[in-house]
Length: 159
Image 1: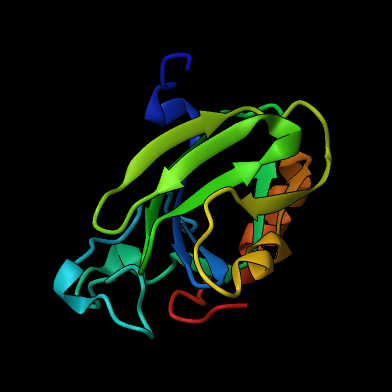
Image 2 (image 1 turned 135 degrees about the vertical axis):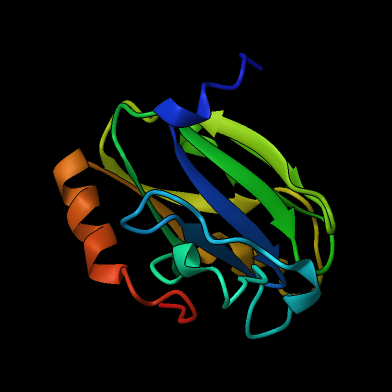
């Protein structure tokens, strides 16, 4: 795999797989993630966002539909809530195992707008086929900015 791009030039998304969905967290309008406290991770807060950190108030969490701008490097910090999963976007030739307790980076730069299926490439349980209900939407920077602005403020809510 090619060298990870510089974080300052890329969009960073935190992804937590779970039986049987894809959770994602984006930095909000301020461009910075709020601090995480892993002791806070729970069914209703998969990212353990610290409520005391004001930088986390505008972070955005979504379920099963990720958005990215076309032509920009995207760094995904991939993890799992429960069992081993594997984040796979076949159209972009991206695959990264999602392992509980680890945050593993992978990256890509989408070159064409579209809606692409996210699959789990690791048999993860009886509902494994449901892990293909996730989508990656690649759109213009303007459309991405509008989408993110429409989600800002929902740090503890999933779509």
